[in-house]
Image (cartoon, rainbow, N blue to C red):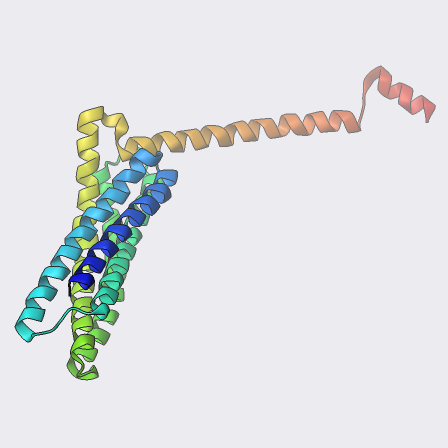
Amino acid sequence: QRETWEGAIKMVVYSTILIVLYLTIRFGIAVGGLKNGIKFGGSAVFALLHDVVFVVGLSAIVGLALNWEISALFLTSMLTVIGFSVHDTIVVFDRIRENLQKTSGNENLETIVDRSVTQTVARSINTSMMTIVQLGILIAIGTPTPDLKFMCVTMLAGIIIGTYSSIFNASPILYIWDKITMKRKGEGAGLVAEAEREAKLRAQQALAGMQAAPAAAGSTAGVMNPTGQSGAGYATIN
């Protein structure tokens, strides 16, 4: 029992560290550097910790009531819950990133987050419902083994809370984090301002590339078709 709990704690800690690193790099590259990537990674981890605490607490209550013991299958179910919760959160955050890059300049983060959640909520619920139905069948008639039933109950609770958390916890945490950052460092430190600056930079780079292309083409044409006195000299020799 003690080794199982120690393994569960280590698993959550290691998973949390890796999730923060991945999301920080993934979204930091996309929106304003690592300082903004930390906002996405930290928000996802806070939502994940909420899910883990809820699932562990519920599992403890159910296990005590039904005399179910913690086993290696519990660790398997917790890993599944963590993976599902983070996956669902990434889907919402990725839509926020896309909408930030498409911002028209007169929108705030609240509007962008609200639209992003609205665009992904149906997909999140539909995906979760299929898994919930399957787990419900397994719990009801699938297996008489207590360990497997405990695993299914844990996964069912985790998927339900993970779906709710990715919609109602992760995105609001990101919004609040960004508001606190803007109060401390100014409006320019917000996600929307960073996205607008990057959009302007990309537009300037694209314009510079378009202006450089005709000049390069003209230079190449001058070499291939010499004109003037030297050009005439070449013609005479030929």
